[in-house]
Amino acid sequence: MKECPYELFIVDALNLKELQSKEVGYVKEKGSERIVAKIVLFDEYLKKRNNRTIFVELIKGICYIFTNAVFFKKIQERSKKELFLLYHELGHIYFKHLRNGDNYEKEREYRIDQIIKGKASDKELQADAFAADIIGISIAIEALKKLQTQRLERDYQQGVYKKTMSILAQREFAYRIAELQKKLNEKAKS
Ligand SMILES: [Zn+2]
Image (tube, rainbow, N blue to C red; front, side):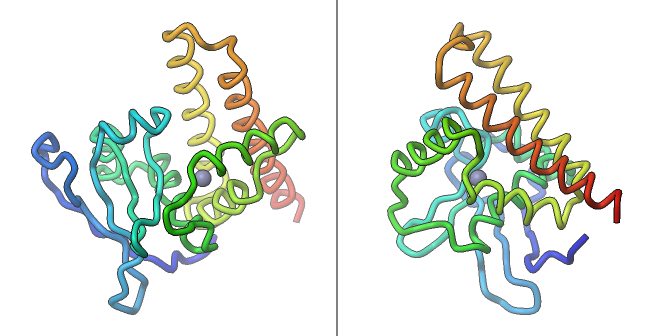
């Protein structure tokens, strides 16, 4: 495992309802005062963005990690699976994957294109590897499996699990998990 180049600071507040659309923490570079990202609680925004639980966006040169109250609570509890997903977003920042006014649709199209070709996008795999190096590969796999199941359950409840988007999402998770599994196997051999 690697040492994380970042440090996480978050509020201890229990009543997260009052903190909607507000900053609830930040990430700073270790050994410096440089703020790497601000963490914002914003359930409504996440719902609009394909119901994700966490994602990062570059707005006017500042990285914002948006997340929802349910997920943030887990971060407060320092749950490793959720921390993996947070570090995944930090991986995107670390590898400078983000662009100002990030074109979400374009990125999504690229991801879909890659899945159709039978793989996950390089950016996703890099961000996974970054986070797995810090949190551990086994936890990374567990975290992605949990997210995959949650997505399937949600799509099932909404009656869209047979739709192309749902199937592609499941496949992307499978490719990402397979990549981490490969890493774990290689590590076991060495
Ligand atoms: Zn990602």
